[in-house]
Amino acid sequence: MSEELIAILSTDLTALDDTQAIELTGKLIDLAAKMSNEKGLLIAMEWCTATLARISDPVKTATLYYFEANAWDAMARVRAKEVSVSFHWAGPVTLCQEKELISLRRAKNSEGFEKLNPIRRCQILTNLGNLLDHVGRFSEAIECFDLALAIEPKFGMAWGNRGIALTHYSQVLPHIPHPPGLCATIAFSKAAEDSLQTALQLQLEGNSFENFQTYVQALIQRNTATKEKLADLDSIDLGSSDAEREYRQWALVHRLFLNPLNDLGSVTTAAADVLYLPQITVSLGIGPYFESFFNQIKQEFVSARYLLFEGVTQRCPHFSDSRVSLADTEDYPIFGLAGEKIKLALRSAYSLFDKMVFFLNYYLSLGIPARNISFRRFWYQSENAQKPLKLQIEGSNNWALRGLYWMAKDLHNSGAEFQDATEPDARELDVTRNHAEHKFLAIHDDKWPELEFYRNPPTTLPDGAYFAIGRQVLIARSVRVMKLARSALIYLAYAVFIEEMRKRKEKRYHKEVFETKMCYIDDDDKPGMIIGD
Image (cartoon, rainbow, N blue to C red; front, side, top):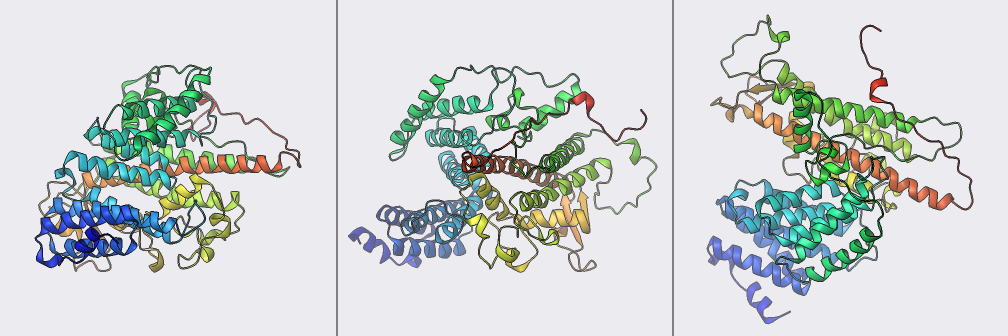
């Protein structure tokens, strides 16, 4: 242990003011991380907890959460040296990463985040993106880097790590049918190279320059060998009517198309839901069960997305709301078709998570009874978080499948063993969905003075039956659930792709495989629930 570390550890933290305590805690974390000193990191975490308990300044709170996340990241690296595997599903390394994720999100979601120095905000978002990419949530990682670059376009670490994440993403992309020049894999590879090249021209940290340069060289070689040239990603129109163009532009901006190109931004070629399953290996005589099931999940998502758009953008009362007598409770209530569409979209999108693991249960032949399947419980033996992970899960090297598993950690569950979530406000999200589904979710105009007071149920309605929410908060939470569902669908499709590649590799030389080409329904031929011929 160095003399400098000994001197820091011997300091009486209570004798320091808040600013001094935060600065010394950050210094301790940096030094202990550099030396891989576990004792120093553990003490730093204790200091974070103690200082957080005594401060009230939002900016200092956000800063401490960022320092705490750095301590957990350093601890994960120390613990990783003690195990022989590099692909972690559970164990001491994963526990540290969970704590890091929570701390980064607390920093990002805190009241003081917007008041932090722009570079500090970029560091928080970039570190969050790096962690999400590492655990298989590559789609969400890209958005974190883009948020950082929206704050500071010259933040080199965000550009470089965005390039690495895009490279990883491109390696799990199935071959999606596309018009000439619009191959998603090529688009991602080109975008990755551009991001990394930009990073190399900017200020970087540590040995990042060498790391980014290694990725750039590999991408240049791959992109040079590519014969297909990339077309303009904004070359497709958004529709034939103003209404359709508005809808597609709204979905593009919120990154809600089931299309990997939407992760590159609001490019018009992304305004189509082209995500689909790869060819799936099944026994002879088995029909296209999985493709049909995925069709249904995909259709439910797309329909929920449009309901949300209509609920958010409706500009006048609908005729179905006319001649509906409602009591005026003088609490700025919001009633009408628009609000119900938003709630329906929220409920429908949330229901997709369970359907996705229902799909995986049969696809992976796990044999879980249908009544016991839920997104949060699916991964564990006996569907109990106190039990280890299922052997088929923990033994997998499927990166996208791990992304789904980590997404499940974000969701709150009523079971006592599942209430801890890596998303700090997961319970609020679940309460909103639960009340919309089963209880009394009261939507109020955001200008109602009593809104915050009534967020807790009044004594006249016991057992949490009543939950008040402002319109903008409901919209934000509904969009967030929709974005989570969209990412989960991408991870599901790519997890199947990775699994199918593994199957084909294993069976290539000792078992004959027959392939049937999957055709797709033309838009003009789609059957629907339409009255008449």
